[in-house]
Structure formats: structure tokens, C-alpha cells
Image (tube, rainbow, N blue to C red; front, side):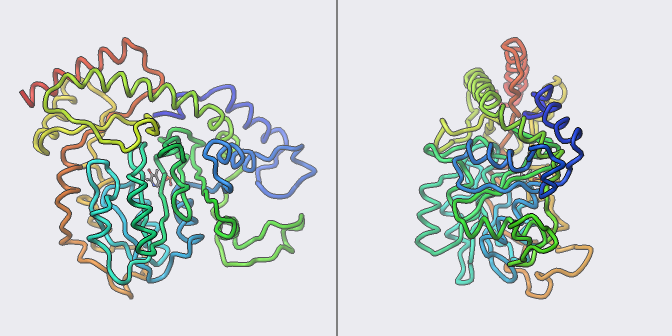
Length: 398
Ligand SMILES: *Cc1c(COP(=O)(O)O)cnc(C)c1O
């Protein structure tokens, strides 16, 4: 519960700048806005922090993923490899783009694995939508090499991985396009918002136009702008962007505190025999938002969660039974139940979603518990939490 932990005077100041002028719209109205351009400032902060050449703020992480797919040229009829463990927005974005999601296996790193992607490849595979889960990067050297070899477009959903790096490079910059979320639960939040990033100028232009009805944003007469492509309204408001600006200016502080607390809790929990931790390819690059650990079996993980409940351990996520993060609970998705007909209904699903075999993902997510790391914990908070967690876990595994 990161960004929201550090909410105060800085956010209020940025929002007041907007309220004092009344310029709630991110484009034009130069004379009324008195020099305040919050969406542009947010984009500049994100470019500075990630090193991206281009950033474009939008209304949510979900619309950032939609923009990332569109800007990378992925749409109707394209087969896209996706993970069964993600926030469901990633896979909804593929469906609504008219694409065909193909599920592949993840591994203990909680992200799509190279072996998983290889097994899911078909002659029609066009792209990989890689999701950096739980605050740390996937195995990027191996995945980028495979995408290059097989000529696949790589798109990164870094919705929950702002602040994660791999060998010094920010997630979101390894493929053609990338997306972040600034919703209420992310490391930096603006209530509702998202960021598209890329190093590719044309992809940036596409995302910029796609997220605002095709506008090219050249000149100062909005009604007379050209429209190089079709788009829709995925704009962020200046009020939301203002909060995001203040949050991005705190990200190093939040990230440092989280990383330190994550490490402290990891050392504490390391005394438990039989407990293992997520292998992160580049531990330095972990954003610190979660401490991810595994029990020896799914059954034990379920029992540990029950013990946590009894002893009042808060902040642990068990994704295996979560309705939005793991495929087992996505019956609406698997049966393509929608309010209106979709492209996939006409084109046909590329896999039998009700009979998928993903034993590795089942086993990994079944054994996984993710502790949400707070930046504001004191040493005393952590000592007490660790003690409760250890005794609960030991009741189950010893
Ligand atoms: C949060 C999240 C999203 C969606 O972001 P919203 O801002 O809530 O729309 C997409 N993908 C992942 C991986 C996420 O964690």
C-alpha cells in the first residue's frame, strides 16, 4: 500500500495549482493555466526516473496496456502470448484489441518463462505480453533473445512494477512498448492513472494519438488538428496527473524504504526451514513492493493463510484463490462471457481455455504467498509481524 502511505502536502500543492486555475484539461488553454502542465510534468518525471525517451500519461494502467498494444501494432486476429498469473487487465486488453490470448507457463520468478513461451509458440504467434509481477522484472536477457530470434513483438505490462529494473534498465523499455499503472494500490498512485513508455518515436506518436481520438497535438487549435490514426478517449485529467507528479518525486524515497524493509523481513523469515523465496534475476532491481515466498505445497500454503487469519497477520496475498489475479477463477474469461460480441467470438479462441494444462503455474501460484511490504513500517512493527508469521508457518510445516 505504497504511494498512498506517503500522501500529504506535496500532493495537495500540485492539485491546488490546478484548482486555482481551473484548467482541468491537459491540452491547450495556455492563457488560463498559468504555466501549469501537470500531465506533461508527470511524463517528464517518468522519463527522468525510467530513462525512457518517451512517456505518455493516460487514464489508467488498463488503458496504458491498450495503448501499448495498439502502438506496437497488435490488434485484430493477432495471437498474443499471455500469463495465467497477472492482474486480469492485461488479458482483457488483448481481448478488447481484437487479439487472441494464448496462455503460457510462468515459473518461480512469477513471470512468463522462456520455456513457457517456447511451448506456447505457434506459426501465428505475433507478440508476447510480458507482465512483471509483484514488483520485480522477468528474466529479460533470455526473453528478449527469444523474441528477437522468433521475430515476436515484445510488449511489457509493468502495471505493478514501477521502480523495478533489470541490470540497470527500467522495466517497460525492453520491448517495443510498456505500460505502468498509477491506481490506488501501486507504488506511486494518482487515484486512477497510467503511463505508456517507449524508446520508439513512431510508437509514441501512435499512443499519443490513440489515447485522444487520433489528435496529433500539433498547434493550438484543437478543433483543427490532424488525426493520423483512429483513437478513443483514454486521457488523464490534470487533477489526477497533479497527484502523480508529487508521487513520482517521492519514488526513490518510497522504493529505498521498501527495499530495506523487504530485506529485513526476508532475513527474519529465512530462519524457517522449508520456506523459499522468489528467485529474482536481478535482486538489486527489485522495487521492494512484495516479499514473495513459497511453502512446500499448495495445501500448506492454504493452511498457512488460515493460520495468518487466526493470528491477525495482515497484508499477505494468496493469489491462487484471488478472483482477479489467477486463471482458475476466470470462468467469465474462459467462457468468453461478454456484454457484447467480441472479435474472438468470430475468430475462435486459439486454445481450449477450459482445459488448459499449466501444471507449473498451478504449482508455483499454489505455493506462493506475497507479503505487501510497507514503506512506513518501524523495526518494532516488523519484529512483531515476523514473529507472528514465523509461528503461524511453523505450526503448518513442522
Ligand atoms: C494494476 C494493474 C493493471 C491495471 O491498472 P489499472 O490502473 O488498475 O487499470 C494492469 N496490469 C497489471 C499487471 C496491474 O498490476
